Image (cartoon, rainbow, N blue to C red):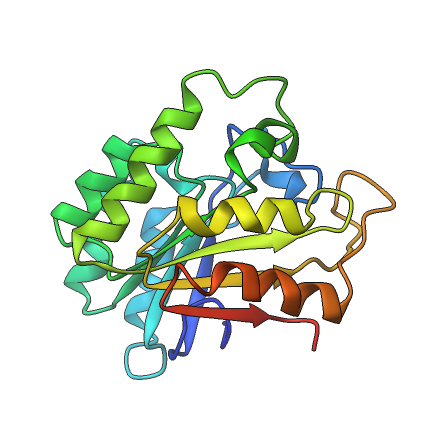
Length: 224
């Protein structure tokens, strides 16, 4: 159960394993290779949600990268049939899958990661090169801005990966976005790389100011 993962709702978070990125600051690195044993199957999840109607106000899907799962739309449809609003977290690398679930009305809120400025994306994702992935992320970004679904963009801010130049470029890149959060990095045992830290409060506020001319609502999430 979470009061944080789905803005404005008491929700439960469903973690799906498997991801195409290897971000050095990932909090869920144990889920990345897709081999983590599940603690429940779809039927058990649906039973859990059926029994919590009137208590839970939403379901948040995160990962890993949920849109890697081909069977996700079918599961989302079953959860929607129970009456639950659904939030989806995504890294934006699967625009066709994103369009499918949004256009089918299967998600009510999307949180898409903006890992860094485009020229720093690969290193922030733990990849040698983005290749065609950058165009896919661009497609997902543009789709959300124009789709009509409720959404946010967000960047987990890491002192070793982000600086003022990052946000000076991110602002115009997401120009016209509805909502953007700078999330404060917090170290955990599951983070794959040691020694990463969050920017200072002063830096975070300065970064937010760099994005504000381009985005309707810019906030700092966590750490304060």
